Length: 245
Image (cartoon, rainbow, N blue to C red):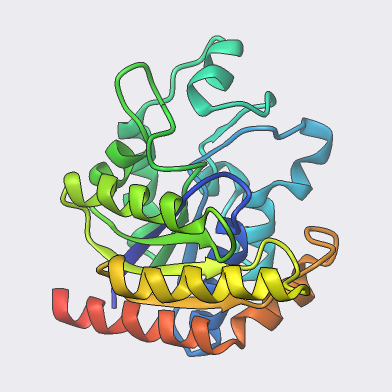
């Protein structure tokens, strides 16, 4: 296969780690050798590094790679990468990330790379997440929320990626809240209906709502990995990979 995918989000907290981990474990269970990366992460306290997104991705697929390879840039302050790096007197180098990615990708059939925040989040003074995606030459899965506000965020993200000529495999909608009330169900249904007509890319989901995250990370990931949406996402990814080779 020898192919990778970049998981980006319409916002922070929409479920990028959930989708990245579920996709990685789903592909692994299908016999694909999978590597993971979270090139940049902020809000990582040294004492709680084991609870970082990168550490969770590493543990879910039982990766033997070092945490430093999976996440070359880790910062304490929970702010945008540019600000977090500046606070520690550092500069993020996209070439460094690219070199580590190339090293890892040579060892696996497929790389699942989780982004940080949304596509316009600044990484350096002159580059953002879209520039990182372009450097890695990856297609993208966009993760968005299935409820109210989901349409605008998803369409803006898709438009930004298309402007940079970045290929989008799918938009995956995630339930960030429980859908209990009749109004919440209407909001979700109409969000899905409109995005299926207007997104211009396959729209998958909504993924099941997983309360108690990240406390019950593994059971939540395994549950999502078994969902129809994840199976469809893996199929789209494998098909796209075959077409590109």
